[in-house]
Structures are given as C-alpha cells and as structure tokens.
Length: 304
Image (cartoon, rainbow, N blue to C red; front, side):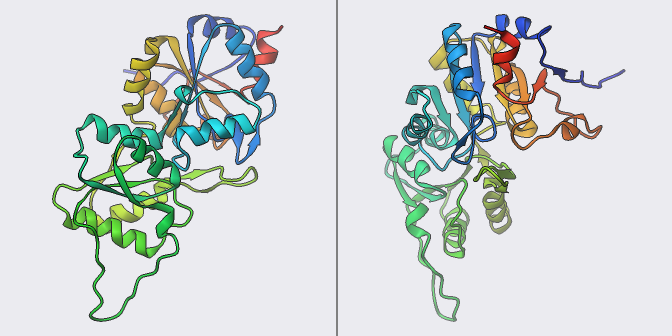
C-alpha cells in the first residue's frame, strides 16, 4: 500500500480560487510570515486588508511567548496593522488557559522561565507568577553549605523563549518540578529556532525547554503549535469549522503540523525558516496542501 503523502501544490492562479472560496478564516503565524524581528514583510498589510475586504476572518496564532496578546496588538499597531487582542492567540495566553481549564488552584504559584508576556497572561488569569525577567540578573553560589531556596507553593513551571536564561532560573525551575509534589511542567512551545532579528535565526524556546527536560528527566505538556490546545479556544470563539480554516505558516513541524492535526487546510510560505529544498527533501514527511513564496502572493494571484 502506498502511504506517500501528496506533494504540496505551488499556489497559482489556477488553484487559488478553490482555496479562497473554501476558506472562511485564515490563521497566520507571525514570525517569518507577517514580520521578521521588528520588520514587516513586504505586502503583508495590503494582503490582510484584501482578505478582510472579502469578508475573511483573520486570526494570528503565534508560538512566540515573549509578548502577551495586549503587547502583540501594540506591535501590530506599531507596524501599521490594525488587529484586536481577540484575534491574537499566543502561546503565552495558551499557557495561562491551560492552567485555567485544568482548574489549577489559585493559591498555587507559577514559576516562569520566559518573558513578560507569560507573566502578564498568568496575572490576567488570576495567578501569581514568579521569575521571568526579574530573575535575569540573579546568580547562584556554588560553594559548600550553600542551600538554594525555592518557593514550596509553586505548583507549575512554565517555560518559553528566554533570551536571558541563566543557571539560577534553571535551578529554580528544576527544584520546583523535582521537589514540589504534583508540580506541572508546561512548555509554551518547542521551536528550535526563531527570527528574533530580521537577518538571522536564533535559538528558540525548544533550547530552554530541553535544558529543563535534561535536569528533571521529565517531558513537558506543550500548549503551543503543533499541539491543538489553542485550536479548542479558536473554535469556541469563532464558530468556524476547521475544514473552513487555512493555517498559513513558515514552519513544517509547528504551523503546518498544527493545521493538519486540527483538520485545517495548510499553506506554507517560504519567507521564514523553511526553504523549498527542505520542503522537497525526500526525508520530509510533512507536506502542506499549498506553498508559496510569501503572503503577498495573494495580491497578485487574486488580482484586483
């Protein structure tokens, strides 16, 4: 029996109509699709306007946990794009919602290895968050008879992208997971790399998560893509069936897999981490439905 996946179709004037007409909501990844670092990718603004003018719902689903939904809305605005907080689903928000739906006790604290975005979303959900940026300058004392103290009321450790990760944070998270009974280990995502600047890729959250997997000998619950946890919230909010959604992303193992796991149509753009040779490599078994060079190809293909 032949189980080979059907190769992705290049998006063209011949097939864009069928895709466009069958989709009510477009889900966009952000880094590498909408922007790189703080630089908007050419033509994105006009493309989003075109999709809205045709009555399509737009949703932005990002694994980058550095910002909260409020901070992401501000970033879109600074780049000249109007997006509401309700249209943004970040992995920082997903981490807070995971605790909420699992009835995490409000009196328990959450230790964060990551950015302000995670802390803000946890606080909005009513939780006490420790760590994050405020532990970035802290140092450990590696000498005999020195005891590292940690809060015994921490019931969850949430790890996301942290450019200021250090030994202090790793020890704090490790002790909570290993020593606090029933402590949850949550990863916002496990992306290997990301476009922290527009010219280069940098180590992603997967790097910080792997460090704590190594020290705790535990695997985390992952709430970002490709886990379909965020999709449950999307479906409740937008009331659109996944067969009428299209996930647009630049990563095969997160964005495209997320779309496929949820039953969405999928479109890979080559403006981020995945290039055409990776897509066509025989060892790659994640094939999107369609691929194109960048989001603004919609403008040329759909015409005026």
